[in-house]
Amino acid sequence: MQSQDQNSRNENAVNHPGAAEWMAFHYGEVPAEQKRQLRAHLAQCAACRQQNQAWAQGIAALDEWKLPAPLRSGPRWQPMPMLKWAAAAALVLAIGFAIGRQSSKAAGEIASLKDSVGRLARMVEH
Amino acid sequence: MRRVKIHDDPQAFARLVTRWEKPIQRLCTRMTGDVHRAEDLTQTAFTRVFARRADWREIGKFSSFLWRVALNLCHDESRRFHRRGEFSLDALEESDGGMAENFASDAPAPDAHAESQERGELVRQALENLSGQYREVVVLRHYEGLKFREIADVLGIPEGTVKSRMAEALSQLNRLLKHVNEDESCNHKIRTPEMRTR
Image 1: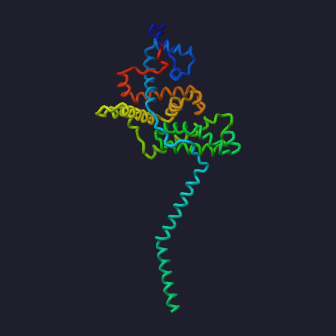
Image 2: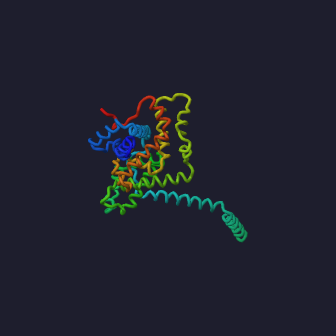
Image 3: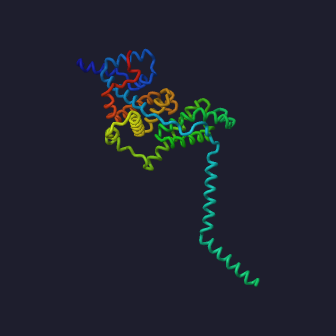
């Protein structure tokens, strides 16, 4: 035979609404009758009241994070966003190639050879 | 979306972007906590949706498809961000109430606006500390106002699981912010409208 205390505990355990029900309650997703029952339960159950107070504090805290105004507004859909990146990459490669040609050792040797050839040509002409 | 999928209609897609750009940008901002990264993610989300327009099934809601794509991008970005080590608030969870201590450590009493901004920043940090599966539920339900069953549809999980995650998220959030909330409760008891009896 169960003691009165155990009976009381079991009854409470059965009757406590679950977290899912409480979430629907806090966010207004329960029908009016269920809302009335849950409020009645809150009024008589200290444990649920304490738990729901904590959830309510969490919900209230969420409202404190306000977003700044959007940096850009209006539609800015670009059908081919990769195109601009491809163009930018091509430009960087072209500049890099040009700089490489100007500054590489081979480019220096070619310039020196051209200079020598030019001098030889002038000597032949004279 | 049907016109986009079948006819590759860019005008139709531009209309979808106009309709959904701001909600998606808000979602990405709440998920990443960074306005600039959110803008890039929003652009990427629409690019991805356009690229995957053939995957969209007409029986499903376009918005669910779009939310899902954006959320996946946010999770990927979050993982990359953590790997790079640019964000590390893990210590906060280990040292209980660390954020609250930081918040409370300002010697001079700030004005109301500054205090409000600080509290907002605190909440943003606390949310970033939640795991992605909790944060996404909070963002979709609390900030974007989706119903629990709509969130279940977006995430492909049972509605009861969504609600359980919401409850767990609020508990964790409350734990992270508990010192601040204790200060707050000295002044007044916080209650959601549903808890107020007439």
